[in-house]
Image (tube, rainbow, N blue to C red; front, side, top):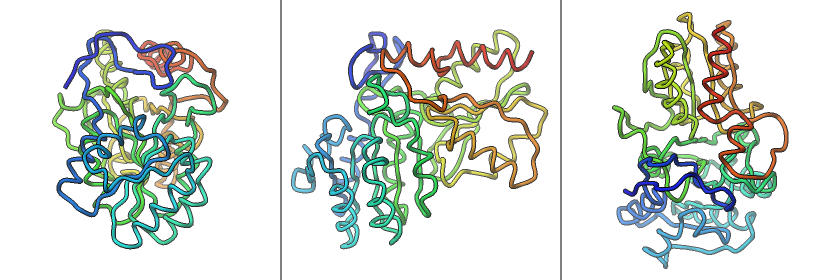
Length: 329
């Protein structure tokens, strides 16, 4: 493990969102996949000219004969992965989320999901994790993919989630999509009595006033905001939902309805993501609970420095606290 020593990078394509001094782990996906590769000969890796930028290079260097560079051809990437799965291999195919979802949707849907193949799509730069504007910001990837039957969608919080998710994705019988956090990834959940379980949510913190239901990097923001809100006398519970589809409906239903303000937090547009998943869960089960969604707006986002953009669009801890306190009146 390493420790971040500088504030978030401001202008690079791959910018860090780790706070100054925050504990991080380098390339957790790449190392977890390489470890899985040592245990299972059927595991193969593919990338669309982005191995270095999706941490797939760790697996590539460990198993060069089991890695396939497909070039800048995302449709071919997923088609090849489908073919490998058909003959009994377990492929992990990495590219940027925008390319996997926007450019190669039909191949993911019909070549992979329709036959129920065990292909694991790894999407880098999910949500607002790059400052390069709409061409690379996958703010709507979950909304695009939630409608695909049988596809499991995972939005990990940190390195712990990623490391523990990789072998479980390989074991899952159908296709999966992981929203990748890469590079020096914060390590947060090791401080909690937590284990990643595919399809399950976990209560990380109890509280009587507010219930935060969060996914992805917003869980670490929720935990920080909860700790700071406690100094203002606000008791906040945090329910981490790393699996967006299928959502752990039982955990959600058990958590709401206790007189607490319910807030969802996601690094995704408020359209079609965690907030709407939670809302439909409650509505379909006859639970009339108001939800306050904290997420990205339904618009194309600006380019710029990540810290500035996170604050501008409401994902920063100060903005989260401000919103919660305003809702509590």
